[in-house]
Length: 144
Image 1 (tube, rainbow, N blue to C red):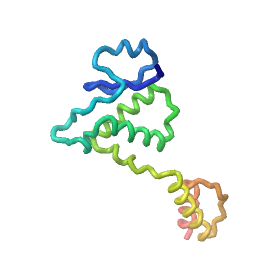
Image 2: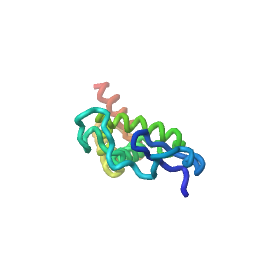
Image 3: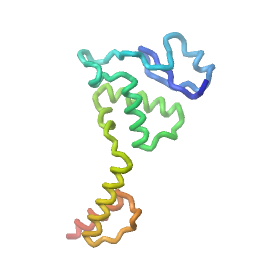
Image 4: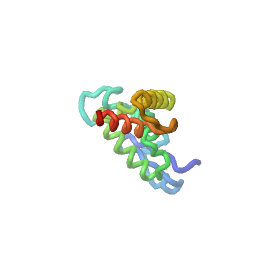
């Protein structure tokens, strides 16, 4: 068996176990796959809205981890982040991470900023990050 791994319960938050001993100590109702349906905390929410099933949250959570560069965190920290993320998702906020720009799109945006900076007479290194390019453009425009 591969550890650490996620464990799911129909009535409790998902968590990560580090060993077979921890997994055995969980008790009844825990599985390696999320439950088929999640009971929403707010009545009247349909699946696919703010009460999305955990499988959807896992996919969004993985995108969010990539976006925030948090993949290297310890399993316990990832467990806390996942619980907070899914609670936030039940409130309808998780969907903002669905359209994380790809690396190609981010590079195109950075190249456009670099071109804009050049048009303003700024001489920046070709590898300068988008945030620094934007800050230089903002500073230049503030001078005018």
